[in-house]
Image (cartoon, rainbow, N blue to C red):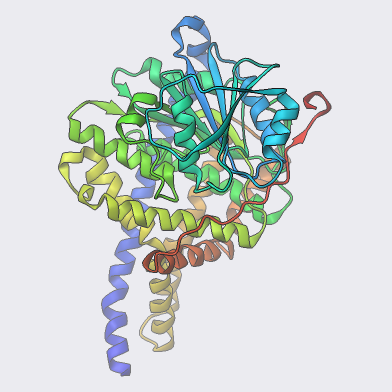
Length: 477
């Protein structure tokens, strides 16, 4: 038995080292590309002010869809910020997704809603709707109340809102997300400046916990004092500035965050809307759009624009965060198997040849291979067939390199967009980036591993996100 275990360690160990070594090499390529992309967007945003020089007539009208399920503490702040966006023509469609709290009543009171009949053709089959409301204080707000007891997930609410969109472009925004006033103008830049057909684009997401807002503008951006929420700040930097910017040069992103994304409405309709059987509808939609456009043979783009910023509340409890990360990974598994024909398929361009294989090998399988690697190293040390230096090399590849990339992402953000102005906040971010691989990384790995079991058992469910409300200045009351 011991000989068999030794043989297994000897065979698997070099394969694991090659895996993490190649993955880190690819990370390095992504980071290099992201530096170039960040610099390009920063120059365009900070020096050229390209979108500010354009007349209002150049910007396409946009409908903003906000699904809301039990969002009473945050819904008013989010809707106010969206109505106050510095954008020529836009409407806000808030969908009360059969909430059991006071979400609808809060909207009625704040915006003086009155009931109206639907005045648009339905392009998608959706769950039944109880009532439609307009606002006496703001004509650009439409509130839709889904039938009580019909809460079936965010995708269904998004499709209800999509039916009501009167403009050719749609923005998806989570109810726990505050969009900065100029973000939509910056987001539209991708549609205005590209030579290709842009079917969708995403913006940066920042952590809102601990940040004070004045009608959507952060007036005191600080890193959360809560350790769990704080650790997610550099994690978000790594995901958006490092990961998604790099993919702009490699065939486009396979994920536009549902918390803040801008889409061509016609493309959403052609793709069948948001998939109601998916628990990560944003990932599923983005992959579906890539597949649809490649199969139609039309040139297109799905870029990421870093400077439009939206602020979202992140979980500050272990149980809620665990449910979120398990659900994200379970959704990744579902989308991968649904679109497995894209894997390595040249018909789908770089999305099929590079992006999809990365999501399978570098994201979906990463927690499995990480745990296997730790087990192999532990067994090798116990059997005295691996040296301590060899183990340190493995952990350096598995954890140390990613820590360096996280720190580099923080530095890159501070050199360009500088969301956090105080040097103490910057140093705090560096510290959090350094300690993230020790404890927090292992927790997220465990939650992602659990997703394999729930996926195989076909266990559904979204889990709950507890809202605490945004902190407003006196001017934002």
